[in-house]
Image 1 (cartoon, rainbow, N blue to C red):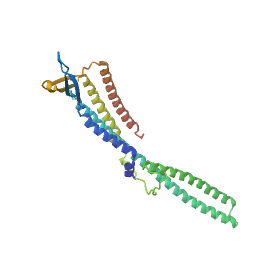
Image 2 (image 1 turned 120 degrees about the vertical axis):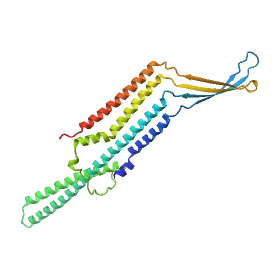
Image 3 (image 1 turned 135 degrees about the vertical axis):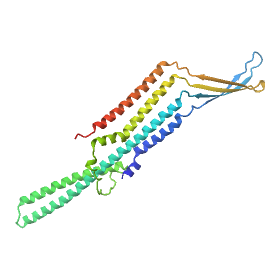
Image 4 (image 1 turned 60 degrees about the vertical axis):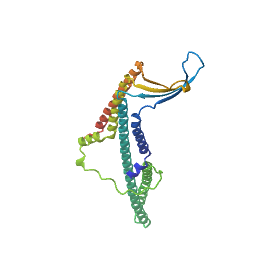
Length: 303
């Protein structure tokens, strides 16, 4: 049942696709920007005579420096780790929901069965009371009591059957099936672990070490810290290199050009704001991790 729930879950499918998209962004983050190709028509510089045309074909490439490509890859890898941990968290949540829904389905099914057995027994008692009363061997009050008990049990069966239908619908929803789809009768519940293995301190450490939610928060911190380092590199400009060929046709030899340029970081306020944003995101990621750890500690049962 758990395998079918995992396979048919649209949420897990969507998260798996998000993770695949995040993995693709790792290659994107390490790539160079697309180059720029220009074709320009211009006039040849002449002091006299007719105007003659020349064609200039240029190629320009921006080159990220200062380790920006590596930092972008690290940010993208941290996002992949975060997405992977979120998939694991969603899987654990789905498994928990299926187990709880199955337990509810099992208990409702057992309750309906026992109530039906009880109703048959009480109905037999009521029949016997009516027969004794008809033969003058019993009292009418015994018949009334037996019929009232049978009616109460019948009403309880209706309530339990409604609960059973609700539990069946919940379980079918988790299996991505119609709510009224038929389910096999549940046979047994999963056995409870040995009480001696339920050491609270050890379970708390296991929860902290194996929690996919904490792993996702840790990956978010790594991404935020790396992004802050990347933002600090924005103060150092990238360079752009280019080359061009000049076609003068029959009016002169072919010429060439080459150049190098860089963006001047004059927007101080913009970069200050980017640095503050990156620092706030890193602090928020750490605060979320601390809050999650506090929640795990707070969920510890009271002895």
